[in-house]
Image (tube, rainbow, N blue to C red):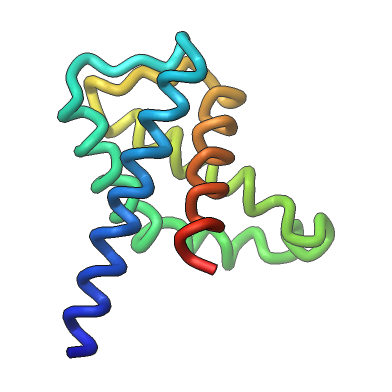
Length: 115
């Protein structure tokens, strides 16, 4: 039963990532994707990047995170979105601030679904 719950939460997080990328692309015309499947891959890759890379980056930047009272987490999230965009060929995020906007969208959605 616990495994089913973990799988359901993982799938929901991937869907939240996909919706975050989609909303950012609708809100900012500079963020584009070649095909809707690019959003599906982006949501999946962001989930994997958040599991594998993000914890290491959070640990390495812990002093900065403490000094900024946790606000540096948004920069780390932005870097994860930029890494995801660089790994997905059909997703085009032009720069740091647009990736920051995607990270904000995904963070807000995560606040609603995962308290």
